[in-house]
Length: 382
Ligand SMILES: [Zn+2]
Image 1: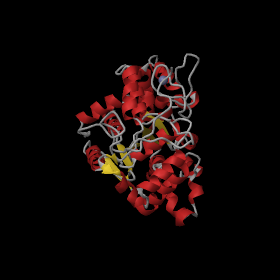
Image 2 (image 1 turned 90 degrees about the vertical axis):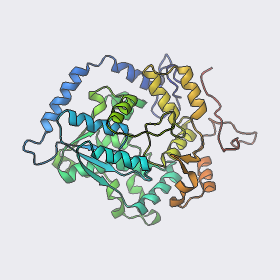
Image 3 (image 1 turned 60 degrees about the vertical axis):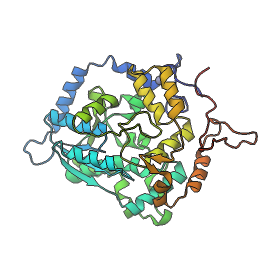
Image 4 (image 1 turned 135 degrees about the vertical axis):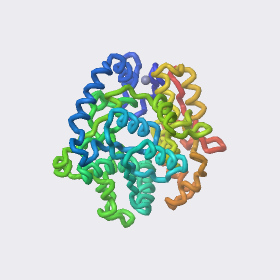
């Protein structure tokens, strides 16, 4: 396990590469942003919005997918500032928190039309468990739905333009072609949209799941997309994108944060809307040896707000703790609707843990402290 010499990301992250100087592609992407002429990009965006603007007020100008988080709050604010009339669409999270609900109400109060889509909760719980057991991702249905549901809405409401936030491949590191892409296509979704090799069609027949239960998780057909001319753009390509700045702007418009930092994280302003997110982030740590604290430390280091040394310390302290609570909700209560006990959960955890990354005893069993936490073998480059 090697770490980027500039940020704190390890090379165990999928799609992340370190170059000859030991610098990761996410840091290089960020470096590339310094030479971007944002005025040129802003006029490009203006041209796109003008092309798609509904001429006669008979329909909305675009769809903005909104989770209620800081970034989507800012997406809406920017569109309103640009005189665009969006239809905001939420694919609800799997286990929504109270503060997540408040922040969605806050988005409506910015002055927009709003649609909320909630997939069948009984099926969703099955998908949470299948995702967790088969690919180690409790949030599998949510990560599919946040892409498919707004795209389906685009087809249903006949609104071709979808305004996404950041391109995760650019901010978090990914293949150069994908990182520079400003358009979200079916190919991008299939490759980076979080399917983890578990295709939606694979689920039919499992636990009584039928094709009719999976409409919300299915991408519209090519014919439908073509008929409406659906296209999606990443706002992060057209304007400088920074989660912390977005948090400040969103807060100025009523967005609420937590009084303390989120469990396993180092900030209080993101991933506030779903109690399952702690489990999701924990599995990333078990598989790849880094969690949400690493992601956040990297973002702040790149922007010069945190030294690499301080970042490493935050990571050591907060990354990869077993999520006994998330947003205050106990793990047992988070697992209960999925028909899982904490013991069963820990067995699944062990199955997905990459034992090459963590301390084990002479027999190869994982060594845990009394809170169930693992110790990484390598916390930094020598
Ligand atoms: Zn880096």
